[in-house]
Length: 110
Image (cartoon, rainbow, N blue to C red):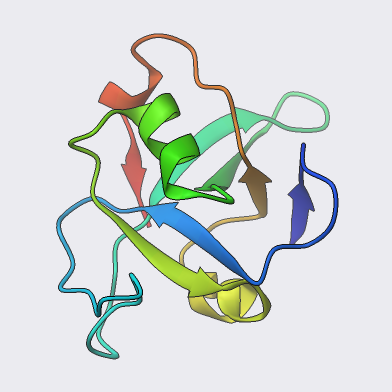
């Protein structure tokens, strides 16, 4: 899995948008070890095929700016993101994306 970042350095945690509300601890981490459906976006890959990309943000304000105040989210340690996304179909992680208007209205769950 690859990642694309627009920030300098590697943050300790990433904020991932989710399909539904997830019970969270005060630090934003999920309360249970159950499945969390993160948002995956199809993007053009090499050649003609598309690949599914997980969205991640370095801060909650950046997630809110890109996806709106009503977007549910969880915080995951950066070093656990690849393992957390295993089996989701995500082939890459896009960090701090600038979404086009309306893009957040048609996500694919993972």
